[in-house]
Length: 435
Image (cartoon, rainbow, N blue to C red; front, top):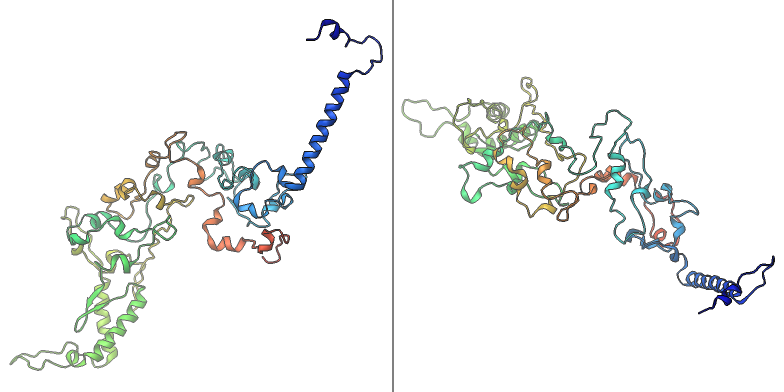
């Protein structure tokens, strides 16, 4: 230990203190530290180059040019949007957006290999907690801070119904006793996942309806099957089939019976003089059957079985306008929605371990086309709970995509700036000459 006398020697009372070993050691240590830092920087510059400045790993999608910081960064500036748009397409969130955030505000680099697209809820809430748009009021809820505070899904809001121009009764199809037990209909009989695993495939007559609703009408010598298509094309096809039957079975159709009963005049099946007259007569008969309008049952009428109903066109379809004399019937376009949640994405494949009735239970008793058989938000919140350890997550990006052009493949392809592989490997600079 130093004595008080030794410590007192440090006190200088003259104007110009003399250097001693203690002060000289300060200078030496400082010079040595500076030299060590310079040496370390030179070593890192020689071995790691610009990678030494990385605050974290480059995401996997940018790994091909991860060593070239100048590819994205300008000196003394944040990453500019123009730099991102040299490779990525310009995407629009909403034409009514007050402020368009920079790409780097939501997509934060140098955090992890796979988190570039993991946009945090904070990025969404910075606008949607108190939403301000170029039109007032906004058409969506202006204050959303948590999933528990999320509004009711738009198709389930008051006054919203299914506007499809088609008659359909889920209850009859799922409970009818007119179908063989080996062929009992379930949700999966008609609703099947698409290739992407998110939306269901469209319902088509051929694979889903035809086995019970085969469009057969009685012709001159047997049943004739009508196509399930536009009425004008149905007429052309029926005329062709009638011609084929008329030529093939001419004797059976146009000749009187070979052994008539005594004293009884038995006419032939058809007394037409020409093929055109025969076609027109039978077309009128067949179309009269196909387009016979069903009578609305009385309120107290007993429930009919599925196969006891009128099985022809107007069982499901509606007439658009009364057809002119001699013209084919005009049917309303069905306009069945391809996607109910217009501002959100949903993956059925991620929920495939759950039974259909867990979310779409009301469909079992639905008897009207106007019923919207979607699950409400309360069902979602059973698994997606805010700030809970055992939660399926409540990230906004689980359902909502900021860049809405990703839903439109044609629009996305039209705005994409393709580059050569040399751009990504650093051999050439990106350009837009090949847009």
